[in-house]
Length: 316
Image (cartoon, rainbow, N blue to C red; front, side, top):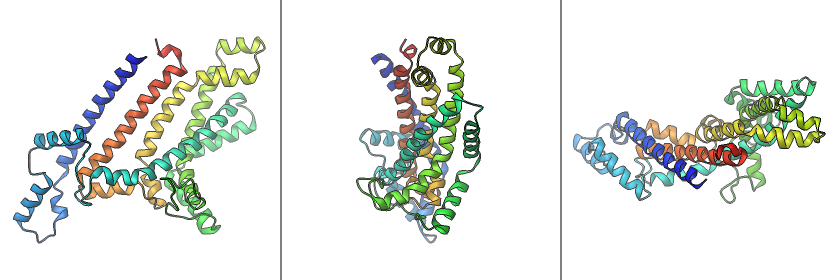
């Protein structure tokens, strides 16, 4: 088990190194940020001095070497626009994005897995067909349309929920205050619809496949209670693909909440990264992409470790 974990950590480190090289190379070739930072009437001497001050007047190899040395010290450089450490700027916005992503995924799992189990046990029942129709709607409807409809209904027409902002924050989250909860409801629902539908359909497919196996039929024939057969034998053996998808989708939630954050004016990393790309703010873009990549790698590592607990065959 220890050897397996160390092996996964080694591969994760290699992945992070390759990602850092690719991201840094792309931003190096993207353009000159000095042209955007200086006024139009700036002289050539001003350009030279600014490039030297930002450390972008050297070759790619030297810049990347300096970048790796700074990474080893926990420093990804200062933002060209904000004048602050890039990590500080990203980490200042990241909790808001993580808050939305975590709550949306929890909501999706809490409702998606049970509904998928219900739809798999009696697939021809009317309520199973209704569940599958709702899941099809969740997958088909665009995120931006869902968000705008929620704003129209609950903010404009009914006036029950605020349409923008994060609300009152306590201990890095809005979930501990009533004002924050009201601001959270619509963004979380907007992000959850697609994830819930995907988890629901995957759970149903996996359960229906497992329920057809011989050992499930044998357990049923021997008089094992239906609840034990469904929740202990069938569900446990259908968790491998479900865990994989949940891990991947959570990473995507963190990385691609920009549409939802834009609709609800949520102060997360979405708008920050778009503005930084437009301004060619290389340290912010590199810091953001490395953090998101690290989250993806960490999630995949956790998923691989969870495999060994869910399915003993993986340990072999």
